[in-house]
Image (cartoon, rainbow, N blue to C red):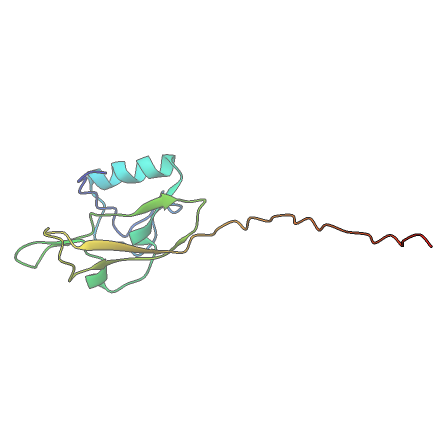
Length: 128
């Protein structure tokens, strides 16, 4: 965790496996480092994967409301495709100049099979 100010942007060239086509803006130097780190770790950057309106992508907006950046991310291991959606919530009261980033996830739980044993009782006939 940390405040990396990593803008990964829309262009996912060379990072097709980890960055989707629905980012915001252009990649900066920190975004390049961020993408390299998660490409090495075989992860997916969730906020770029799902199509949303621009207002649901921007995680930080300047005080003059002109500059919008997507610099806060939720990242998950690529082999675990449990993320269903990632977006920002603009109205959340979190005492920050950043918007809350929310991920909707659906965990795939393994079914725990138990083998039940049945006791069989035999009734033997009584002696004549």
